[in-house]
Image 1 (cartoon, helix red, strand yellow):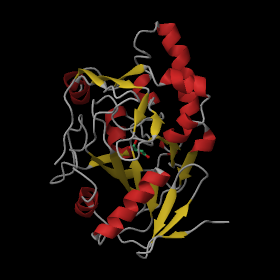
Image 2: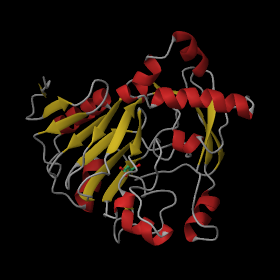
Image 3: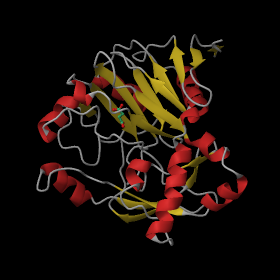
Length: 309
Ligand code: SIN
């Protein structure tokens, strides 16, 4: 039976899976300005980690304005060279771009589980993704609840992961000499993050292992490569267990809003080979520097923090 929570301001919050994900109904994001409504969306985000809105008729400007209700909006991405004209905050996730760059369509820019831009010392606090053009089937996105993944570890393993730091960096497949490859090299974003981060608003602990950004270096500070590899494999598997996930079937006008401090996500890479287009637009909110359970902060190895306005 669907559990439906009327939060008192005309919004209904409908949970979608056992550990993560809810649809919020009864809100038009063009008009979501009231402090009470924003607070209810924020509460739902903290509880469900990712929330979905359907049938939203918004463009870039409205998406950015909605995001600003929750924090500072960053530029599109540290490596973005061509955001839409007039909207430097918008990151297009566009199969047509990947086709012109790579000679083949892709579902999304990454085909692995990741938390957004964790190579930064201050990864985005949250991301808001809006669907525009979609394949007739395929191209879903899944999110996983990293708080549940942490809390369900055996205590001995929790005590251990509380103490370790993992290296995060980009693994670019960009063609050598291309503008993109130059951007990645120049920004040179590399950071050690605690494997467990404490959420600055909820106080919850999350297993912060972002496979897409940790699978390149495969390095836990102080461990040998083979030790790091083995430990990371266990943690990646725990963080992405099916039971901690929710899967979204997009439609034009669907908006997903996720807490990047408590989730990883996967653009399921099953649409590129079909030859259909898939176009979505993302904005991100400025994030804090993660802190581990003992209060230690992430440490930048190279690259600059990423600030919004
Ligand atoms: C993202 O990783 O931010 C985009 C996910 C997607 O393409 O579904």
